[in-house]
Length: 271
DNA sequence: CAACGGACCTGCCTGC
DNA sequence: TGCAGGCAGGTCCGTT
Image 1 (spheres, rainbow, N blue to C red):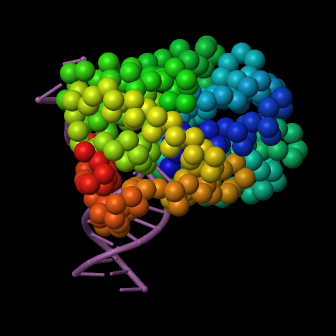
Image 2 (cartoon, rainbow, N blue to C red):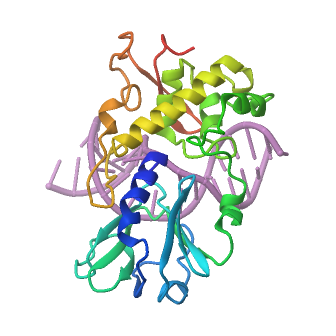
């Protein structure tokens, strides 16, 4: 479910609720996520105050004194701010409880997400240490993408989705950014020129910022911290629109598989 | 090494 | 209506 805009939407939603609040209890109903929830998670968190709620790539970082809770939402995860009194729904796997009236609840039907603890700098955690640049950081540039991709035979779409090159771009926004940049998803990354990469970097910034402004994309089950969906779906140009007319030129949108992922594109606008 | 396929899960939709 | 099959927003890991 969540790509960068959905994770950032979640971060912005939960931060004002939990920041500066003290964890009073941790409830783990189902520890079997992508990696097991640490058995001593309560010992790590209870009594500690949330000092910062940050994001790196699609990871949320809840910093407390002495360590950081690293949260990934996987494909189907979400975090909700609720009350400890509210009875858990199916797949509500973990609660962080803050006193009598506040509960941060982790929900994840497919259990591809994770909650991990690190006492060290989370940016040095093995899952985070090798990640590429943030696409909304001003330092992210088409020039770097161009340089790094020389010699790569991979198609540009899976290249763009590889966190080593740039983080946060999943299957929806990869298709959308390539459409906006006029680049065919199957074009070899190493055979894509500097001008195209500059257009692509700008398209990535644009599409992610716009999605963020609309609270993310909800296809099936993405909901923000308050349980509300995102509204970017209506802005999608190609994703999920196979056979429908291109909004720019009316040609039917096509779909192909790249690296086992559905890729949508306009055969006329994208070369 | 880069590149690829498989794996992890549940839920939902389609078609027989 | 029931059931099998395919597909889904991610990404790590083992094998070529």
